[in-house]
Image (cartoon, rainbow, N blue to C red; front, side):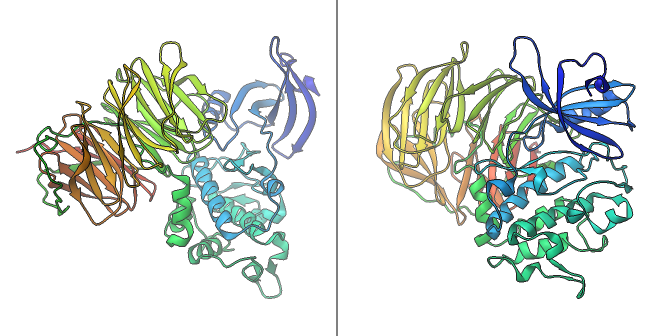
Length: 588
């Protein structure tokens, strides 16, 4: 069997054949190389290639950057066809990890995750072609992974139907019986897996041929939310005209679910802290010690600064942003990392290297700009140089919540309540701060001092050079903070207020502004004049630091998650999966 791979592929030892169809076959093989431990791989052979190997390899390399799809390891071509080697996913099927039936909330979260994967896959004009329970792998603590991509199936730019053969008839769309498949066919198959998870029964048992209708709604173990029910019914429409035509459509409909359903689930996937980079500053005037009493300023819009919308991107739930001049870095709740050149909206690209396998909790650029750091709920912090992965930081049991860069340190906060300083040159931990008693929500630094807020309801200020605690303030639950360039003032969100704690007046904060919506994230302009405030409502507001007056109000998708702000460019992400970029307009 090895000779069929080509004479120069002796390093692969075939173990067994996993599958075979008219277009190719799939093999389980062991890769044996000198000085390395053997590892399992999956080899896909294409009998009659549809495109040059170089183009296919380039596209699949980008595709494999998604943490919920297997990564491409190798590729070659011989007289017997094209060969592509993928990483072997040593994870059981989701139905083995937790046998059905599942509760509706779990199915809804699972469906949300896989619809985002299909949207990503379809953006490459590729279809999976064989969506069924055995091809969806998942452990209890990780998002589902979609394996066994049928790479011979690629749609035209106008979504022209392609010939479809093979697959599991139980999970195939009606049109596949006629030998064709489109994006909507994948959605039908995913819907079939979803109702299997809800009932524990096969699709053949969930449709009444005599009555020509689905009977699965009568067999679910618990009531469904209205929107989940609506989405499933439309996914399973037998008519292509009535069915969803793209994965983006059911994603949007699921996000309209009531608070008791999707919204709470989506929030559970997102960081409990603000994820914008710590852009310090408010003007000295409003933070001066002369303000002896707390003053409340209503957040009534009085627009004076105009912003022009540049672009709006739809890339999934974006949980972290970082901005360096014209380069925007974005991290999603699935672990995907993307960059965008704001001088050209078409240049959105994936970083080169293995991405995270879970939600991105924080992003931060090095002050020099070229190097980006990413933290994830998968317990790993990664370093990227010019868009390429260069180093991975990890510790046993790590749960990084936020990161900040203050040369010579990379500062990483953790869910344990610890903060670790890493030596940037040697990439080793050099000091640990352990005074917090619960998870750190966010950190911010001015290079000399470090501010941190925790679920233990304390705000703490530290000296980095002396590695000592300067001050501790008791606070109410807070999700976001920023540190003034002087290091003497810390700006903190408190439910619907923005408060300023001054080192010289440590007993009581000043209230900078108050609003009607709960604050989710703060970002301060580097020139110390403007404060951007995101809330769980549908408005993003900008306030003047000197007066606390609202000087801009921008329409925003519901639920601001993250903000990046450099004073002239304002970027925000929201629960509706959009990332919006505004440019400040010049004063006439």
